[in-house]
Length: 206
Image 1 (cartoon, helix red, strand yellow):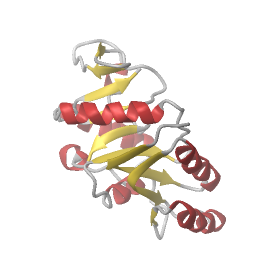
Image 2: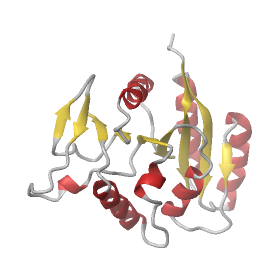
Image 3: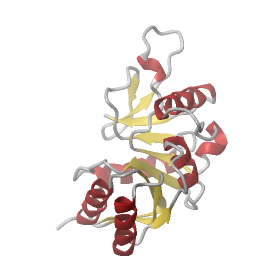
């Protein structure tokens, strides 16, 4: 029998665009893991009609708050308008194609604990295409990310990523909103440098 996890201080923020099947799979997976949140917000970027209809069906099943868009404005706007609706101290941000593994709720619980213990930690990252190059072992498989400005190589700049992460509610107040009207990879890159410039601190699950 799975342990039940209820994260009272977390809003699950999911950005969605034309992947209602993936969204359904994600929500079902969290349900099967007995993992629930204070609120779930699905921010949709003006999906096509068939997906928009399915979103409404899923909303009735999974009881999430649906934030729609009149026109497609890109990922940056989709994140911003979803984050604007968050009322809890913490936000778990993921995209709709993420599939949590069985161990994810346990590690998320540890991430919440660490953020309560360490007010200086702004974000806990759970996934990336590659490990960050400068990591200092912390606890239970987590490591503290260390930015070394004078080191060589470009990977040191990948401190922030749009991949799944837990962040504080004041994230955009501290690091700025996601820049809209540009390609999503450029918006991610701009947030990366905003995070570094503001001396943000993060943990990374290895």
